[in-house]
Length: 303
Image (tube, rainbow, N blue to C red; front, side, top):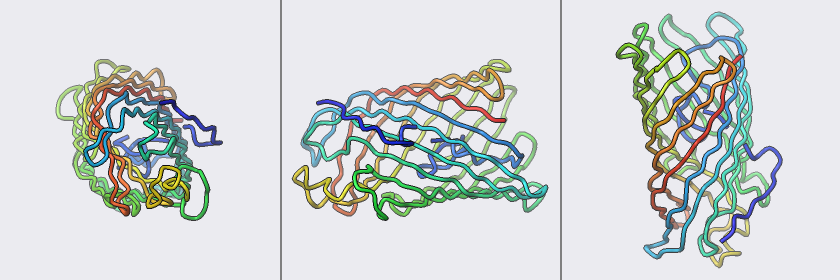
């Protein structure tokens, strides 16, 4: 099998901090966080999940690997001491090296805007929302069916200086699980230790120095895209034409983050990606992928 790459303007590279692409899961990667200060931030990421077997209805089809790249840029514009607008963009490409017999697209792409707000409606409370309208598809034959507008909404309660409680949800009506909750806390429970106990991406961090942080945790990845009008017919499965595809996986891993400066932060992590799923829910077709190692490199910063 061969990896079939496709050059698509703007769709090669998205963002993330508690965790999500905008359509995946709640998130500082998505730029949503307790603060509402003026400024901008960027996030870029490259990841690779190595080969593992994929099957359909218990029949093995071969091995599949996944490569993804993403970039986002976001600006916060305060209009008062309590309110700020959030605007930005996010681009992402995910490519699959899959067997010819597997109904898996060569690539899935996101090209979206970001529009949201941050509102401190009480001294210790802040509400943040983010809508990401854009194209989410294989970009084979773009039309209105490729458009989607996932929503992320989070509320933060600052209980005390080292403890924030967080609640909210990620809404994507095309995903096989339309609503994903975000419940948990950010807790500095000991000197140099921070617990980010927030589903779907809990982690624990240790500040080894002012510049270096090591971390370990988990992440649930759930995304949704529209495939082309002839996608299924080309594979002898016309029921898959113009259908929504949810790509899901969970990850456990550990890594290190190096803050060279406020505007340049490098993070490297790796671990195990398990239970990769390609789910055409409306057509009742689901491919199951076995677990495999993954590596991820991220560069971010704020101004």
